[in-house]
Image (cartoon, rainbow, N blue to C red; front, side):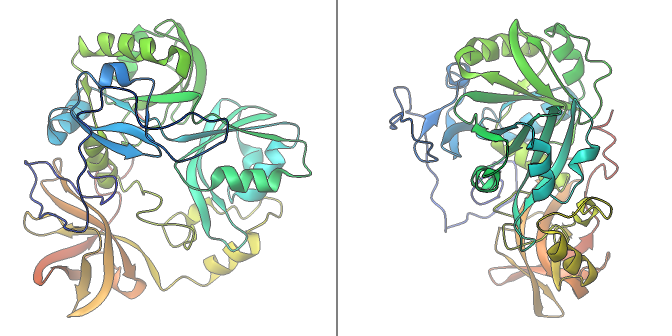
Length: 409
């Protein structure tokens, strides 16, 4: 899947070209990438990850994610998808922002900025959550990791989390530190991921719960591991310091490749995340939307102490919005493009935000912003493919494995 357009581009998929976007090849990047290191915290530039020595020798198609060059695919997105689903896939997911929140008031700060009750978090566990502006709009979604009473990580994408956390830390006994250019992230996902990771880990991981975390040596390197991922499969995200990253990734790949795992790129990840209805900040939603609108109203605690966005979120929950995200099962074989109009009885009722062809379900899927009164399950709609109308039906999300049995295995 294209990280900019949200569209699959594999020759094995049915999709028309999107003329709004220009494809860029990074195959010739063998020397120093065109950026200058600076002590100033910046999200500009073009950088190679610590894992590039392994990835750059095998991939020819790259994309840019949060200043980092990332593999788009290695062989074929669908092949990589099935390798992950049947065995395991190894990804470079560097570019996810790792922000440390530390100090006596770390818990209080985080509890003030998100609707979930941080006080209920156990040590060694993670939350999927959102940070909210006072208006109830979403700063960003991400993973909150709790190490102990005074140490947390917030792991998100290229949103404004770092700025929002820092701005609200003033006057509190807390420090905010970004590890974006100091810690890079590998992700091992798939039904064999636990077995493969255990072979190179010096700790017993058999009892690590879903959304648990631990620190250990993997391939002889100290790392932090969370049982999370962007695939809704059994999997682990592994955080390693840049200085040790190249050898770590090479050794991990050497170990898992011998056992049938595949190196995977962004498009394979994108296919699986749409099947699982894992939303993409900046594509499916942004700061203009509240948790209620995007199906995350369950995050809004009814019992926690007062916090910044509480009144705004309570008002949104009490007065359901007129639009919300909905899933679409597409008839035929052609995959919609981001921005395609959704119609009901000839009237526009929505717009596609993400879409893919689902290898596991055998038909295209889409996520769309829809008028609330057109979102009832089973509602017959259609998608306007630049004048050609394709039938679609409103479907429940997640589209595949709705109970998340695979990731909780």
